[in-house]
Image (cartoon, rainbow, N blue to C red; front, side):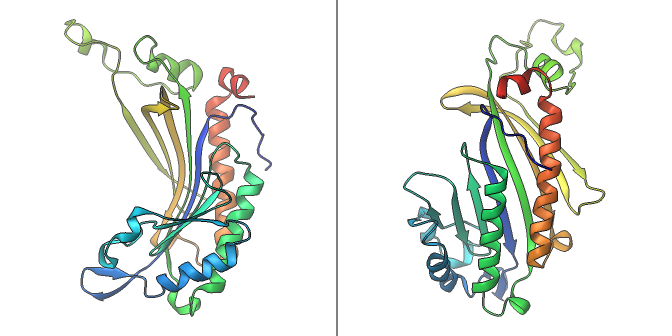
Length: 257
């Protein structure tokens, strides 16, 4: 399925993340014994595509508490996207406004292929325990003067009702000052769970409705073979894409085109 390209897409960030099990040499201490080797090998392999290197402040964390924390970042240019990140037991691919699915998919495949190539004895040592594809979108919204629940109902086809008598005593303003709505649904064909979240936040300094759509697999649901990982990502994208366009169909879609 080919994704429709929107000129004014509301995307804040697209994220692919893949994690693998860490070793536990001492009870309660989890490390990746090959991590420091991976950093150099990854840089050598990705330098032509992502030449700008950043060491994040989290790189100073002790090894015993840095599991699954990204510590190093490789960009195409300074302060530019897309980028890739690595930490003990985790790699990510991230993109923002320039995101196009075909390009993002190719970058994921390239990173996964390289991970299998550079990880020592990957057949015995590389056991994945989490994969996710996550999209964060945002629409500017005036929460003080506009009705967010009406917006959900009329623009996004999502009906959320609070008991009206909660506000009958005139002691509480009906205009919400904050919310965080989360939903999770198990998948039937694809292994994993789809998550949908709505929260108030900011985009470019303005108040905004932030919504996230994420497909996630954990533990036994995570594909282990590189071709299976890429196939899982493709199916996860098809599902998030389907949900996104169903939610915005109508006025919002015309606004984003």
